[in-house]
Length: 296
Image 1: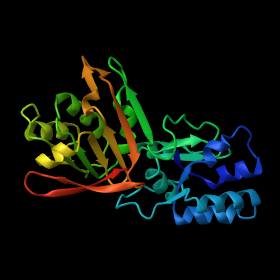
Image 2: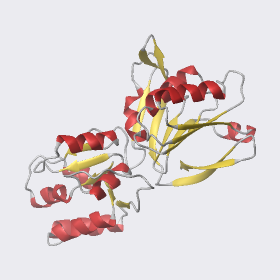
Image 3: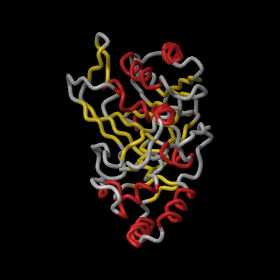
Image 4: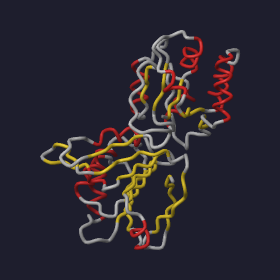
């Protein structure tokens, strides 16, 4: 699990101030932090030997993922939220854990939610259906299922740069993209990379459909080279430099039938694109290349 946690959560754990904390889940997490958050932890808890031992071991075992910048995102100032916590959570599975002794105001929660960030009570950590730090989310779909793609929307919220690789993009997968892109940053650039197969939607239809839900977004559509089309089987959505969403059986594993979301068999996996990745160059048929990151 990845998360960002307020120092009071750690204080609750190491001083036994609050019972029923899910301490083992929290302390085994990969913590998204900034240098300011690490200083906050030390300034408030360094006199506690239990904290000191855990912090030393976590540092040695690389259990802190330091976020160095906000990648040109302009984060709104929130009255009750440390801006560093906001930034770190945005890059760390969108989970901001708070102590039961703290109150997060409704307005702040709403702003965080608009950015995809959930505020989580330390006694009610959500069930994670993937083990370890990466992947962050695994959705297993079956034929005839009724799952909607809503779980994916927070990962794209307020993003400025999105690349979609779907060599067989069709009307069903386009419905999914329209659902997911409703909420990205108004100035976002969305790049669609498809193949030149006969049954693939043309660029004009793709552009018009996405602009209909996000009018101010810039949409670019390109065709992949034969080499890339042969090498990359899975479909991907690259969300800035933060996350990659992989579809093993096509983005149209979600599809609408009479206005109801339906499924066909496949796995949808959200990965941290900042951890354990390799560089890959998507080649376009005009000779250009686009650099993306694929986790190992």
